[in-house]
Amino acid sequence: MDETIESGYQKAQVALTYAKYMESEKLVAYDEAFDQKIKRTSDLKELLKKEVEVWNQIRVYYQPQITGKSETITCVEALSRWYTDRYGEISPLEFIPIIEELHLHETFSLAVLERTMMEYSALVQKYGNGIRVAVNISPACLLSHTFAYEVIRLLKKYQFYPENLTLEITEDVVIEGVDTVNKRLLPLRSMGVKISLDDFGTGFSALSYLPRLEI
Image (cartoon, rainbow, N blue to C red; front, side):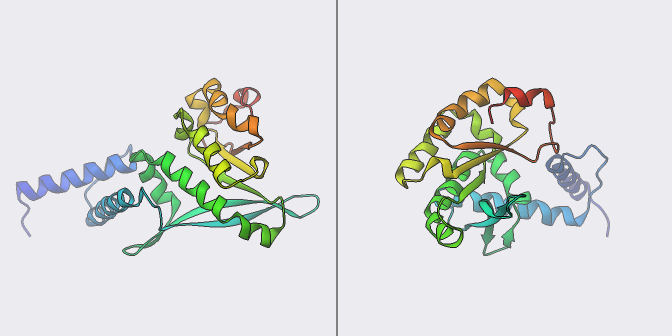
């Protein structure tokens, strides 16, 4: 099939879009699979925009964390999954970057927190009183002046004991500034919410920042 200037240009645009999306530093040649990937990403963006108010297709699963000494379950980690009618279950590796791109990280993190608090009574029945829940939050949430106070609002709404909640942040937060992060987290830490550092060593690793980060 002969290639026209117009079709060649369209394929070049697709390859360029794909290269930007993948943040590729290598030469990218057009592939038919790119069209499907870009269309899927575009569809997921539109679906997420519709989900923003209700997040009713987001599912939360709870992975037990076992202590090394007593081998007892003292905490569960909330893991979010997104189910769509069109594409089935979507991995966080795929939908979290889209949420970040659409600047929906705060509403999403708060939605997962609220879902966890709503389901906490079932966790107590399964694991016993005082079971802690760890929830990952986006580093971008810590740039928000309102995030901590929205978490406090949810704690009061569901009469959730702050000491039963652990917010897991990643080392990327140090890029935003340790002093800023500490300031944003202070209202939560003052109430008894625990803060932990997750996946250290997989991103912006800086041991010198750890003593300054109030976790």
